[in-house]
Image: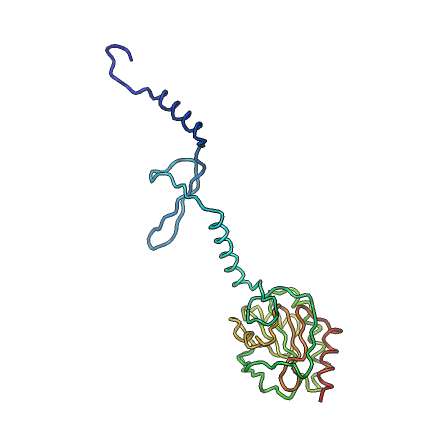
Length: 253
């Protein structure tokens, strides 16, 4: 300080000292900040990230790894619930979420077969359909969606099995799972599907099959004349796979 001059803080010295203190304590420069705020009418708006401190003071929340993992799991669960991408592993649960199948076939002996609950609703064409009305016939139930690529691949085979067996008293019923009606109807027109399908936008129809759940999109069940599940295919099917299963059910007395 020079004589005759007012006292002034040594700014350069203080800043330099602060820098040494940060280095001594392992400090570091703050990274980009983002701010979120509620603005009328209660909508969340955000300001772009920048390297400039805000007037509101630094925001430096620390998120623990456990909390971050929990948030990620919650997000995955939400997405799975919307997209249908998970399933129960034991094949006997009532989970309505799904994973892709591998085409595995399971056949059930008559003594151990399980029936299904009352199934009914509106078909894609708006007409009411009840599975109980088909009792006494062999029924093939196919679970599908327009957003499912394997469903498009198996559609011609399903239609072929249907047209070759309907004169023998075999009925087909589709269950259009968590889809939009417009997309499902376009799917049927493009692939020339002639049998009816229940519109199951909320998955409630599929829940009625919890005794022997489909567990995948697509999946196919073959019901005997008593309405019990005689065979199940988890995943996409083919003519050579499905037609023999239908023939066995038709041959039963």
